[in-house]
Image 1 (cartoon, rainbow, N blue to C red):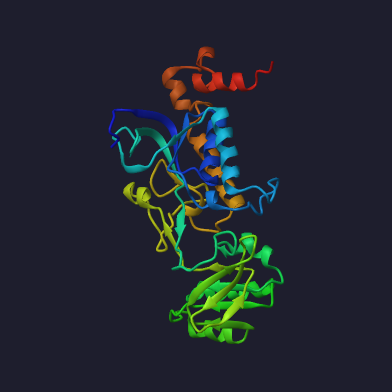
Image 2: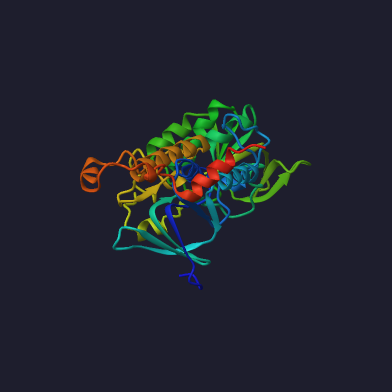
Amino acid sequence: MATDSTVHDYEVLVVGGGPAGMTAALYTTRLGHRTAVVDRGGGRAAMMQDVHNLLGVTEGTSGHEFLSVGRDQLREYGCDIHNDLLVSCDSNEDGSIRLCGNNADYRTKYVVLATGFNDVRPEPPLPRTGRGLHYCLHCDAYMFVDEPVYVMGYGESAAHVAAIMLNFTNDVDLLTRDDSPEWSDETATMLSNHPIDIIHEDITGVQNDKDGWLAALEFEDGMVREYKGGFTMYGAEYNNGLARNLGCDVNDDGTVVVDDHGQTTVDRVYAVGDLTPGHNQLPIALGEGAKAGISLHFALREFPRDLDVIEEQGPVRSDEVPGIPDELLEQEVDFHTYD
């Protein structure tokens, strides 16, 4: 729990400031719900050297720039952004959820978990991330068309990614780095019938060109092989601690179980983005965040009022509308006021 007594109250609290979480927050804020994002900083999107496969965003945009613009947008619409690390959480008897951070505590009706995962990095020496060391085939394979490429790993995923890269180039090496292969006999047969060199010696050095891009890798047997770049396939460590503490079901691989709208197996708790099953892609993350935001709006919106409530309280009075909270209504008026 925070060292002071500060408690922030919201209708929606998004944990994680990546593309999926911020998109969910964008929707709930614009749809009139008191929303905040709690972000500890960092994340996979923040490390992107260049944004790829996102319509309307140029290739020269870095992940840091992309997220910075997103945070500015959220603030303009009235979303609060807290730089904090949440360390615990629990559900209250009234149905609200309390999350405790290092700087403050937060009480909310709904939680959106967008805490993602961390790529498991192999041991150094390694090329620079984004300049020869890559984690997303669908994002970055385009850069390596007709170039020499490596795939680093010793499991099924590494073997199949190496074969997939043959769709882009005829020069693919699979680097096991002195680890014993763990792929199946069937996969071994597949590899033996594709033009893929399997190199078992470990890496001892990295050579870069004058721009900092990978030029070649050095191996323990003295061999030097040229590469434009490649992909590491060592798995992921999912940041699912809060989800587990709240009682959400978690898949065997560490992802959180969700329905088509991001609802977890726990009422009032959603999960989006890299924390959930599926492709880890920016456009998909944005779509998941949007769907969760709309679903949250259906759950939270004041009108139309249910008939049983009307029967109990009477017709909706004119002074009860609009349903948007006063602070967001004022923010919206200011946003649309032009000099």
